Amino acid sequence: MEAFSAAEIIAAKRDHHSLTDPQIDWVVDAYTRGAVADEQMSALLMAILLNGMENREISRWTDAMINSGERMNWSALSRPTVDKHSTGGVGDKITLPLAPLVAACGAAIPQLSGRGLGHTGGTLDKLESIPGWRASLSNAEMLKVLQDCGAVICAAGAGLAPADKKLYALRDVTATVEAIPLIASSIMSKKIAEGTSALVLDVKTGGGAFMSDPEKAKELAHVMVGLGKRAGVKTVALVTAMDVPLGLTAGNALEVRESVEVLAGGGPSDIIELTVLLAQEMLELVGIKDADPAAALKNGKAMDVWRHMISAQGGDPDAKLPVAKENTVVTADRDGTILSMDAMKVGMAAWRLGAGRSRQGESVQAGAGIEIHAKPGESIEAGSPLYTLHTDTPAAFARALESLENSVTIGAVPAGGIDRLPLVIERIVD
Ligand code: URA
Image 1 (spheres, rainbow, N blue to C red):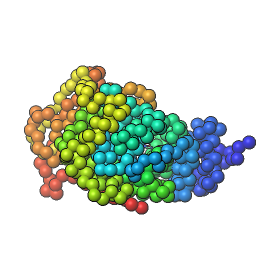
Image 2 (cartoon, helix red, strand yellow; image 1 turned 90 degrees about the horizontal axis):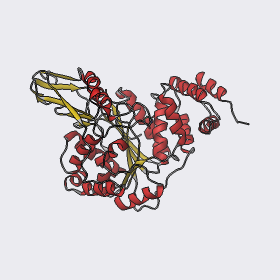
Image 3 (cartoon, rainbow, N blue to C red; image 1 turned 30 degrees about the vertical axis):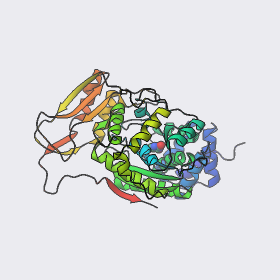
């Protein structure tokens, strides 16, 4: 005999009532074990999207998702643990240089990552372009890599927040991904269950982010910081720009190559700036005050950790990265300054070239994606390369080129300057 009926809980939320703690505990648990049907949970998710949840409900929903699975424990480590989560954007490869950098500065990074879905790439897809690298590790292997290297980036096991796995797949097909209570509880349940003691959230906003409205992104950041703190995780959020792609590449192996350039002391300035900024936030949260992350990127210490971490997971840090079979160059159609570059259009094009997937379980092309030759603020001449498109399936070029139409504006800089979001829009601590 079940404690509640799903229909009564759906009706309560439909009629704008708050759900009680026992109702939330039951419905999340009952859905995970199959006692609440997909169609019932779909209706409840839509009622939550339309009518919202108060902070107590979001916090309880998050706890119920955490309690659906295991909670990891890193008390065997001598270093403090800290992690970073990005809500995702085009060319966002920051985790790749950041995890080894923060480890080189003295913290431990237990980073459980995901695969890409839609126009934003996934960290695991990127790292899997390195020959031999393995995303799936047992808990004991994770601990060993963390102890030996200071950082581990791997797939979350099936035991971590299984309620979220079911709910996320359902939200994806019921147009309920966008609800702030559901996004916040989904992200934070996994991060809290992961067992990190501190967390920096990079909440993206702008045309290439899934929260394009900065006010919504700030609201999401506040809710997630509140959830982290209530669970005893020291949490800070930066709301950052995703109007323009990050760096000069979007696509798996292309982004690994760019990350290695940053670890070698070079690379694009926006990637270096955001990586160092996030590293400073992470180190501050765990009380490491005497580290200099900018120096650790330049002097090779972060690169040493990267090489060690990649090898520890079966990868060959010296192996040649995969290159797509075909490429084509898009050139500028006029002289002038690049005034804007639409991150969403670039992300969609990279996805259409084969860098991303449209369904869970699909494979991705390691070499597919886009190289960007000039960014907003730079001047360009008619006929000069703007993008190089890479794919193993040349039939994909036509659709990728379609999504790149009108992706840049080129002209004279207006009197007020170029209209761009600042890299960091807001820092949120409570
Ligand atoms: N990432 C997640 O893990 N969950 C969401 O709901 C959205 C982004």
